[in-house]
Length: 475
Image (cartoon, rainbow, N blue to C red; front, side, top):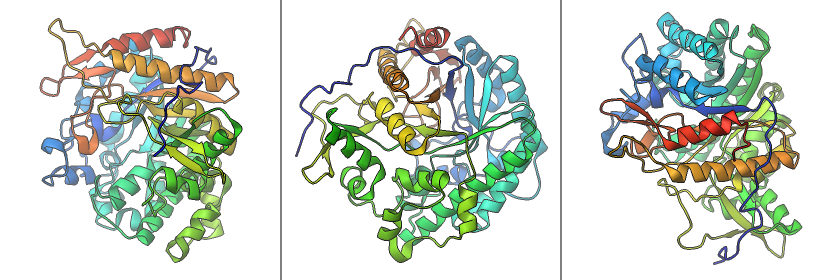
């Protein structure tokens, strides 16, 4: 076993200036913060169903109340204004807008998001709207969910309803959040909703429908938006770091991110699907074709597709959003492959047990920008930390401050080296329902007491406030 026994040259980055008009933001997702799952005409989602199934979610937690953002959104926007956010990324709950996933539109659901957008704009905060962050209407799941070939059309219909109401004020759109997770964790490992395990061929078919839904939504936004839209996606960034800055190690890291042979050696040797592939989710969107090495490996299990479908999937987008939290380190082998460098014992980790690897925000954006030639937006980055309210009423989270400073300095170095990065969204604005982890993991800049629902800005909130006000100069 190879271990990382030396300090990599880029482990400690110096502060670099950020561009003017950089989108300093924070992010949330509908099911994780809204609550009110049976109010305002909202229909049921697969996460409501999943949470009701014993043993699926830590301590039986659910998003039934979550942060109660549905009722407390004005208070939350006031906290965003005080923080100085330039942008807020949030998702829409499909079942709040179209309770059965198709058919009748729930005006009360649209009214909620309409009011939220107005409040954000009044506070000087740009809304970045994500159409799908995993809360699929239950009714559509019972019709086959992402396995159903009708899903792309239904998603396009949903997008059109949203665009008709919000696009006069919303310019920034994200179609799908982390398809690797809602396909992989939901339909492959089954640890997320809907909690099933499908065959490889079924998973690949579902992934194709998700990509086609993305493309159909892009077409709808582009055709019907009332203000000039900026459209992107938000996949997981599976990042590989070079063990050194030698050309061979850098090439090995690049290969590990984009070639199946190296990816399988460093990420998940038993992964026999598309799930954690950057290219399966990126190449069709940008280049209009699936990666040949993946298609060859999948053989007869690969999804059937037409040239017209691929044109739809590759409808032009304006930025490449990516969620990056951590990375693996690789070293070049003699034959040019990537060999994983195992972390040293005691490597710093978050409470989620993810390694702390600030270089991920240098090499990830750099390699993605090289390959796809689009502006990059960091649509999520943050750390789970065991925060609590001190006796004096303060919430001290120095680990989050140090984590974010290190990662942002790495991102600044990528920008200084020519990577076109347009924004950074901290995950998350507030502590919230962390999917199968329930309320165990706290990612927020704002502490939420899930009994009283009291919000308490953490030390990191006040630190990030200074970062935003200085456009990164305080880093």
